[in-house]
Every structure is written in structure tokens, then in C-alpha cells.
Length: 280
Image (cartoon, rainbow, N blue to C red; front, side, top):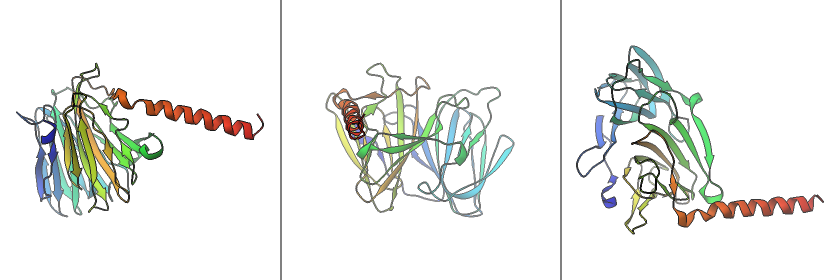
């Protein structure tokens, strides 16, 4: 049911479950939050799952597969991401040097010979500007079409105040021939006392809208799922997908695809008017 897709788990020290796989829950994805104070440490090990850790804020040392990395991020709205890919069976050790918060997202994956942990730093993030006008947003690819992950696709989206994303509304549930994928969003809001709206709906009429707050997660098991940011508040969400293929082909709601044509018509009209003013 789309109504049972909002997860609001208070922050607490250590490694905490946010949402998990199982009957009446997710099919593919499990999410955890790691919160450490400076000097604290934690370990993580999943023998049959691959995992991506995305640093949200803070600093510390990550160690996995015989490698170590000193990492830091002042915040999701002020610095591009640092993220670590862990293949199935790779044990992770984390030691914080200042208060640290990270999200870990896992999915079942077979152990693969030669697969190693891989760190993506701010300089490696691929930035895409999507949409126009009030649905312009930035989409940052972390692990999407890389050669490292077997099943997970992970990135971040940034909505300016008042803007929409995942728009025109799209889905990944396979009902219209697109690859069947499950997705989860992890939200941050600036200022943190604000909110955003996450809608989920289907062509058959099932519909729910969540008011999401800083730290909330929403599971997107099926259906269209646009996001809107209210005026005055920036909205960020970490997104992750897994499913039958590692191939991202969103299916847009046919009722709202016309906005692309409207954008093209306006662009042609603007270009024609500019040419006339220039005497061309």
C-alpha cells in the first residue's frame, strides 16, 4: 500500500534501521542511518548484500577491504557527496573525528570475485541540471552507470525553494515495459524545521501525499512519485534503486508529458522573436 511508505525514525547514536526488506515492507532495499560523535566507532558487515554509504555531514575515517579513507562533508547543501561502495562481504569500520551522520543503503547481491570497495569523492560526482522554470533541479549521480556496483543505483537531487522534481511524474514499476525497480528517498530540508511534499499515485487512482521532514525516508514501491519544495525551503533527497536490471529508464505519466512540448514551443517562439529583433 502506498499509504505505508513514510519512515520517520528519530536520530540516535550508532547504526539504526530506517526501513527494511520483508513481508509488507520493501522487496529490494534496506536503509540504515549511522550517527557517531567524535571518537566513536562502528562496524558494518553484510555477507550477502552490497551497500553504498553516503556521508551526509561530519568527518572521520572509513576502512574496508584493506583500504582506508579520511572523509568529510560540511553538509549536503554546502558540499558535493562522498560515498563508499561496499561489495557483498566487505566489512566496514568507521571512526568519527567529529559528529558524523551517514546513510547506508543495501540490496541483495552475489559475492563477486575481484569486487572491491570504491570511494567516490566530490570531484567524481556527475552533476546534471534537469527540467526548467519551476521544475529545475540538480541531480548528482554517485553510482549509476559505473562498473562497480552490481545492482544498486544511487544519487542525490536538490530542489531550489518552490521547485518540483521527479517531474514530469515518472515511475519504475515495470507496468508499462520499463525495468522494474524499487526506490527509496532520504530527505534533508534547509532550514531543517521545514518540510516538503512527496506524492505517490497510480493510473488506477491510488494516491497518497506525505509531508516529509528533515531525516524522513519514503519508500517508492510502485507508481509515480513527484516531489515539491515549498517557498523558502531547499529540499534534498538521497535516492537509491534496485530491481530486475541495473538500468534506469523512467516511464513518464502520459498525461503530463505535454510539458516537454510546451517547453519546445516556447523555446522556438523565443528564438524566432530574437531573430526578428536582430533582423535575421
